[in-house]
Amino acid sequence: MGIIYAIEAWILAILGWAWITLRDLIPQRPLMEDLCVYSTLTMSTLNLGLASVMRDKSEAFRAYLGFTLVMWTYLFYALSDGINIWSTGSRYVPDSQTVCCPNKDVQAMNRQFYFGGLTLYLVPGAVTLALQTLQVFVAGGAYVSLKESVWPGNGW
Image (cartoon, rainbow, N blue to C red; front, side, top):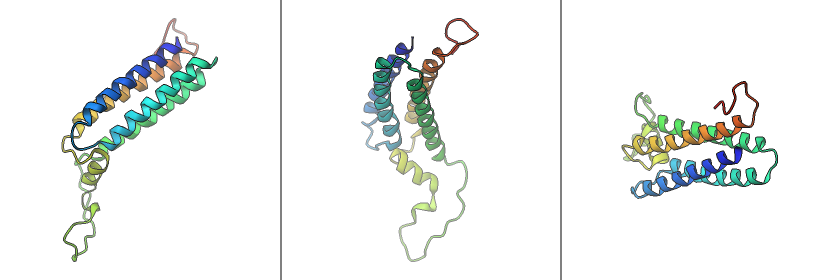
């Protein structure tokens, strides 16, 4: 049953790759989304390979679950860190400069760095986060399916 989850995670990673290919048609390149999708594609391919050759798949599935949880948390943090809902306070800006320091608006700096400065970065970022959430559920299902449970069948 575990190999089916590995195949499903790999197919979801291919769908994420197709999504990020469409997303990259927008001129502002999303560094954070590219990082999540391409690393998930690489790790799901590695997970599928390890699940195919290993007799005890629990270590591979646990590692993949840990990876997907870290990527989901990192993407969620980057999405929420660019939201302009709180004031960053006043920063020191030297008087002699005509161009302001990058730390004047920290949220705008994070949007520029993580998502290419796109104003509506939350819309495509939410789709990428949804794909990462599905990856977490599939990885969790793969890991839980190998453990004994009080419920018959898959508890996840």
